Length: 336
Image (tube, rainbow, N blue to C red; front, side):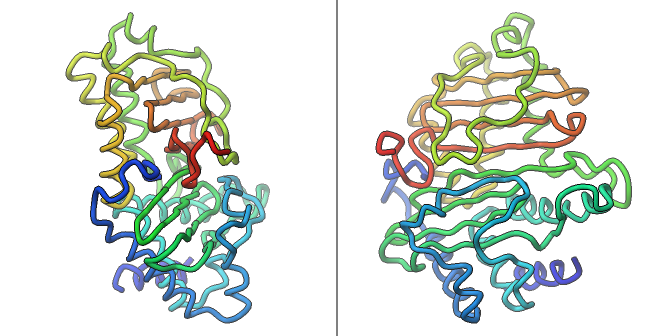
């Protein structure tokens, strides 16, 4: 853990709408990702390079998940100090400052789980997060990369220096709230949970009835581990059925997810949401109306779906994700 903290200090010092928005903005983040990935690759020995590199066309690129499991790629644990700094530099290029804080906090919660479980659960290690690079990082041609481990999966595709896709984008938290020990009170994904609860509680009785799609929350988010987002119709209450204040709360909830990503990504995501029309967005709720029991929500529009679930471990275990309804991994849904 000490080695990880030191690397974070060093790192700090040192579709997206698919093709719908291509060319709309100057994308500096894509070039930054390519430079960061190239620097990391140049620091690796042959064995490390073999672990981290895959062809862009590899099926492994679509093999994502957020559970604790065996993974392909190069784990942070096998990197030396300078290499870890470069690895975190690449991770930092894929998120905003708020997203980087979430990602590194999620990693650190593995130490909390290790202490809580005392060896009774899966292997818990804050450095057991894997980087994988698909193709050759460059401002020319197509390549991609992923950072993934327990409760974190960020997936990127770049084409000619522009970010073509940045989904699935998954952040989870276990525990959702640390309830004992020196980090007591820590809530990693507080805004994703509390903004939705405040919106639900701002609805009147009829609106809440319309918004609620199930009295009991589902066990988890849908379509985990699949390369395609769930395609069912949206559930819940439509944006047009909300008053002005409620609409602002729903927009703020959507922005909470988008603003954890780099500026070019968040601007593209939110631009596509606006282009498709806010009236097409639905907010759906399931489970208890607060944090006292299992609860879940969905926010869905023509270009995206957000899913949030907090049902496990007595409603103290969050899964949250943004997916592209037009197709994750830069692959249009219709072409799969």
